Length: 269
Image (cartoon, rainbow, N blue to C red; front, side):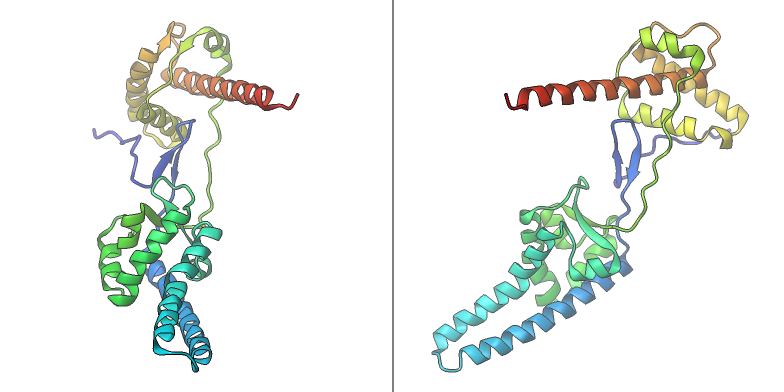
């Protein structure tokens, strides 16, 4: 009998301290194209307006000054404006705001000025000078829909309007509460902790035979990180729930102590 696979991490998964995998879905190619078209149109409108102002301001000047003003206009329209907008909005342009997208770092954190600048510089070449062809094929073959500017900057675009739903925390089984408080429990490896969380969250949907087999295997692996072992006859599911709940409580207590210590050290006397 084939067993269900658990603890599967994808490139878009981030694992929290409680071994919860948060999936940040990358934007699809269609939404990227729609967002890009809006940005291109907005940029061209800005360019036309800047050209009109440039012509008006340089009618009575020499050719050298007009050339310098033209170069400055290109830099402002294609580099400074998009870089400033994405930096201030933490990853959003006009097109992304309209479609519901956001640019984030590869680790899903907010982008900085450096990321936005690199994306703008590479974007000028791949989107405007080369008519967007490299950007299209790069996003087409990338699992995260990355264009060349994203590869250079270490970023990708995610769907910003996806509602995040976290599973409820695992509760401590009352018969094992006293044992869990006295037991020594090391931190579980991320993959194993995530497998246990997924197993406990899907108990009602798992076939009874597979449930018993998988629960037993997970319990054997978790026992390597726990001493002493739970009382004889403890069901694997209760043992796993007790370990996960106890680790969560201990981590929360540790974080609270660290926060209190930082507050005491930084408090004004």
